[in-house]
Length: 197
Image (cartoon, rainbow, N blue to C red; front, top):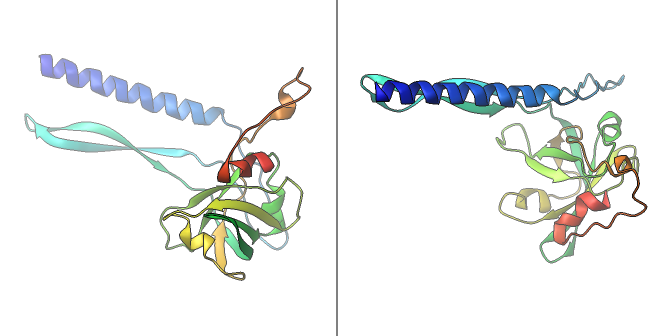
């Protein structure tokens, strides 16, 4: 009876967690649809998908239920490295040329995009845009620290094809902070990228 009670409690907690996560994401505003004559790209809001699964060794002939979350990535579109240069130790300034509708999706400093070398790359890189919104109608600028995960991007030559998403995240809504006459933001290294944007 004690085991059955613990199992029922775990199932109840997992169900509560699943509903809480789903409700939280349902409150997020959907990204606007972005279309142009040159592309059929549409930017949906990315949401997590919950999957039921069994985990661990069966106990008394039954496997314990569990939940795992699989993130549905937003769509990627073709882009191209425009310029890449080393600006400090381990730091690279990279310009990526993107379709106009992707550039227009960047509205607020602090937003980021996901970039992959190609469709075969499983996990994208998450890079804050360092250029200001509207600074270019067809490109993003990034300040990237070279690591094992970003080395392929930092070493990319001008003209290299990549794929990227539209701008993601809410950014820094400084304009909503009524009553403040000045904002002081501190960062070091590649952390200045979202603040510069």
